[in-house]
Length: 247
Image 1 (tube, rainbow, N blue to C red):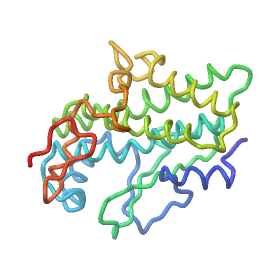
Image 2: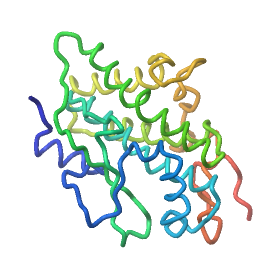
Image 3: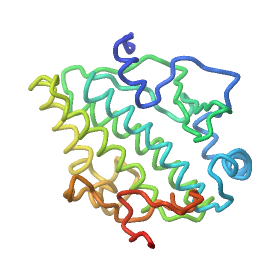
């Protein structure tokens, strides 16, 4: 049985991995995000106060932006440590400190056993990607899109930007060995460009590919607006917002 080491856990904590299940925090199962009743309670309860809005479109988008850290966490463990975290919806909790004004949830996994590649790493990688996207993220996006009446395109880009950020940050690490860097780069290309649509529960194309475009002045502009400005008292926009700020 393989598990994450203390060093790996410490490294993954930057992507909001938690190793303690706290009953004091506001906690809910990942599978609760597929339950319309529980999702409605979440939308109409603490999130309105935390996000400074009762606009369902905005709450849905901001929820998925927080949820995107799950993708960064799982893919980082896959590419850096060759560890496949069990991120099934029935194995994970999202938990947040009630005192946290920004509502930045951590991810806790009940079953801490991880998979590792045996003879065929590519086959193992496909399995990790399928569990993450087809069996988790796609279902959450579909449910939240329906609940909040917000475009799936916005929600998929919310996921994509954190995947790009994670991989590009890792590849800038000067301490990364050439061997590991090659694996990380290959995984990055596979997830964003080569992984087939069926692994994401989509038909036409890999939903991440369309958002990966060259940076200009070290900024990759989004194709959609995440609606963050509607949570800001001054209607401040993200640096990457495709909509020009009103002066």
